[in-house]
Image (tube, rainbow over all chains, first blue to last red; front, side, top):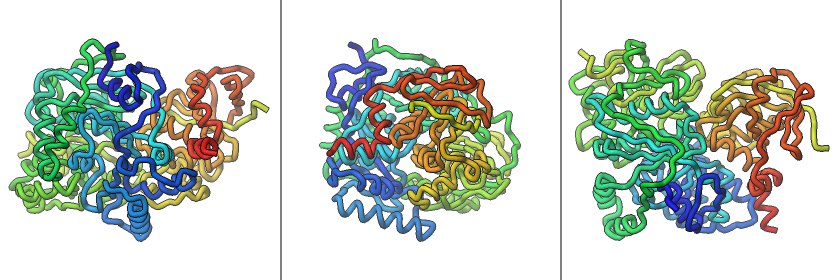
Length: 429
Length: 164
C-alpha cells in the first residue's frame, strides 16, 4: 500500500509494515529531546518504578531556555539538570551557550533523514526540514519514554503543500510561513502532518526550509516534512565535517541508507498549491499568529524594539539579512540579536555581521531562546511594541500582558528598528 | 455514581497556553500544586484563580490550549480543582497532556454554543454524554488504550500500576 513519508517513518518506528491515518501505534523514537525542563521531567521520572533509563544514548539535552541563568532559581534548575546528566550517563548534553535544542541537534548530526524524534518542546516539528519525523509532546510523556523507550501516537492524515516558482526579492520563507498560517489558521493542521514538495523548494536554502517546518507548530501540526535532496545533503556534509570531523563520513552514509521518501501515489487529506512569486511581505499582528496582514497594511506602526533570534529565525542567513539592512545606518528603536547557536554566533562574527549590528547600535546576547517566552534577556514593559523574528505573539508571551508583538522576517525587523516604525527594507531611505 | 453537577466558566476560541499558564514561570515555579493553581489563567481571566471551586468545569471554543507544550497549562487547572475542560476542539499537545495528566478534555462543539458562564452541567463518562438543562450532548469515546491511561489518573500512575 502506498504511504506518505510520515506514514513510512511511523511504520518503521513502530515495527509495522504498513500504517494508515487513524491507527494508534506504539513507536520507539531514535531521539528524545528535552531542555531546561529536564529537571522537572526527572522529578516525574523518579515517581516511576523503572529507575533506569531504557536507552540513555537516545536522550539529547540542551540548556537553552534561560541561559545564562537569570536568577538563582534558574541556576539551581540547571544544576539539577547537570546532576541528572551525570547520574544517568547522558552523552548528548549541550551546555549553556551552545544554542537552541532544535538548531544544535541538527548541527551535531543527532537527527537526520529517516529518523524519528519526540521532544518536550512544541517546536519539535523543526527536524522535518532534514527529512526526519519529529513531534512535540508533554513532560509526563517524556518521563514515560525515558522509562520505557516507547509511546503511543495516532498516525496523522497528511496535508500536502506544493510550492512552485521563486520568492520575490525582499520576501523570505518567514513571509511564506506567515501567509500559510493566515490562510489555513492556527488550527488548520491540528493532529495532521504537513509535507512540502514542488520545484519551489529548489530556491529555499536550508536555513529558510527550517523556518517552514519549525513554524508548522503554529498551525497545530503534529509534524512537518521535506524530502532530503541535494540541498539537504550538502548542508549535512558541510556542517557535520565541522562538528564531528572524526566520523562524519560514517554518519552521512548512515543517513543515506536510512532516508525515507513518500510514495507518489500516497493519499493526502488536503492539497494546497502555492506560487511563491505571489507571496508578499507578511506580518502576524497581536495577539495571534494567524492574525495576519500584508506588511503594507500595518506600515508605519511605531515600534519600541526589535528582536532577531529563536529556533524560527536566529540562523546565519537571518543575521546576514539584518546586517545587510543595517550597514551604514543607525537604529531609532532598540535591537536585540540572539543567535540560535554558538556556530551561528561564530560564523556571524567571522563574516563581520556582528560588528555591523553593533555599529548600528544593536546588541547581541548569549545563544539560546532569549526573551521569546518572557523569561529573561529583553522582556517587554507594559505598552511596549516589539517587532520580532520569533514564532509566537500571544498576549503576555514576552513578559507583560499589555505589550504588543508583531512577527516578521528578520530584514523587516532590522529595517523597522532603523525607521522606528514597521517598514520593509526596500522602502528605507 | 456516574454523573455529578459542575459549575461552568466560559471562554472563547484559540485560548493559548501562554494565557493559561505564563511562560515566565515555567522553569522556576515548582510542582507545588497550590503555586501552580495560583497562576491558572492569569493572563486570560485574573478573577479565575481566586474564585474557582473544586469540581468547576471550563467550557471554551475552538483550539483550546494551542501554543507551547508546557504541561503546567493542564496541571495548573487540575490543581485548581477543575474537573474538565469542554471545548469545540483542542490543540494536539494540550489534548495529549490532559490525558497523560488525568484531566478530562472533552471535545463537544454542540454544548459550547448553548451554555453560559455560571450554568451547571453534568458529565456522564459511562455513556460519553454531557447533560445541560435536561438536554443530552454526546461526545466521542476515547480509544480503549487511551482511556486506560486517563482512568489511571495519567501516564505516570498508569505506568506505576502496570509495573507492579
